[in-house]
Amino acid sequence: MSEFAEILDETTGLQPNKVLTVEKVQWVKHWNDRLFSFAISRPSSFRFRSGEFVMIGLPGESKKPLLRAYSVASPSYAEELEFLSIKVENGPLTSHLQKIKEGDEIYLGRKPTGTLVADTLLPGKRLFLLATGTGLAPFLSIIRDPDIYDRFEKIILVHSVRRVSDLAYYDDLVNQIADDPLVSEEAAEQFTYIPTVTREEFERTSRINTMIEDGSLFTDRIGLPKKLDPATDRLMLCGSMDMIKDFEKYLNEQGFKEGSNSEPGDFVIERAFVD
Ligand SMILES: Cc1cc2nc3c(=O)[nH]c(=O)nc-3n(C[C@H](O)[C@H](O)[C@H](O)COP(=O)(O)OP(=O)(O)OC[C@H]3O[C@@H](n4cnc5c(N)ncnc54)[C@H](O)[C@@H]3O)c2cc1C
Ligand SMILES: NC(=O)c1ccc[n+]([C@@H]2O[C@H](COP(=O)([O-])OP(=O)(O)OC[C@H]3O[C@@H](n4cnc5c(N)ncnc54)[C@H](OP(=O)(O)O)[C@@H]3O)[C@@H](O)[C@H]2O)c1
Image 1: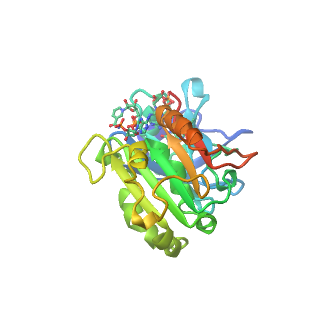
Image 2: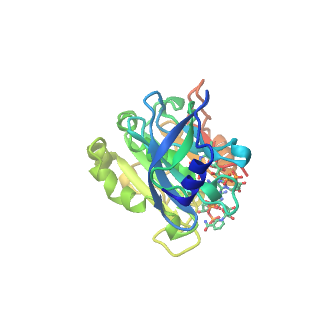
Image 3: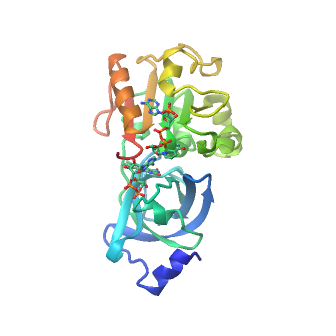
């Protein structure tokens, strides 16, 4: 148990209520000084669609729950709920959350929601999942869900980060998805992972929009056409406000229609954080 958990136990502990359950941390993995992943227990009543987000948190000042939105990184069938988190210096939640240890308690909202789900998209051939930073999280859920491989012929995950060490899940994405018993066969044929690092040396260093504009994103593995086509291509985007705004404008200009839970379209977006 961490120092933080002992402080909580000495006071009141965490109490569930109408909108929150109390869950146990199962494991924690730190990627670097800015990023970590962790998993918590999943209550049997908690249902979600792969790609959705939920509120999670810890007691804040005067023990009132301090909650933030987090994308669930595990797929809808998983036994535990996995998250990928930023560590914001002096961030009200993450300056504490980054200290959690196995066995600690954490609040979980009872109602997941979100637009990065398969039902918000019209049928298509290629699905592009475009992420910057922690915007990777919802796509980790989607690519581990067999349903997406039935809906699309090709799934292309593009992850853009500043530093090599920001490429969380790099080894898993390169190797392990092929070992995942539920999706391994489909992934071997249909899944492509394209990481890019924009502020350090790496095999690829362009922003996602540049790779689309200069065509370098369209490798032989993902097939033709070597550009985005609203007739066959669908996109999900998750990342910073700037990236989302720029892509929204670009995709509208290219004739793509934005989808929603009430009306499916060609692309859907979600901010990875609010600035
Ligand atoms: C729909 C939605 C889904 C989200 N999913 C995730 C997720 O899966 N993982 C995650 O780490 N965060 C996610 N966030 C952001 C998260 O809700 C918090 O903002 C984050 O945990 C920081 O909390 P904080 O209280 O420490 O700082 P805050 O006061 O919330 O944020 C302070 C500042 O830190 C920066 N910041 C916050 N979050 C991020 C981030 N993820 N990446 C880079 N800079 C950031 C912003 O400049 C922000 O203004 C999501 C936000 C939204 C709206
Ligand atoms: N990552 C770090 O090492 C680091 C360290 C300390 C503080 N921070 C702070 O944390 C916040 C978030 O940082 P982050 O690294 O998670 O996210 P970020 O700044 O959004 O960068 C993530 C990736 O998105 C790319 N990108 C940014 N804007 C884009 C756009 N409009 N179109 C396409 N691609 C775009 C970046 O490319 P470019 O590199 O070309 O911008 C980078 O590859 C920032 O405010 C930053 O100051 C980050």
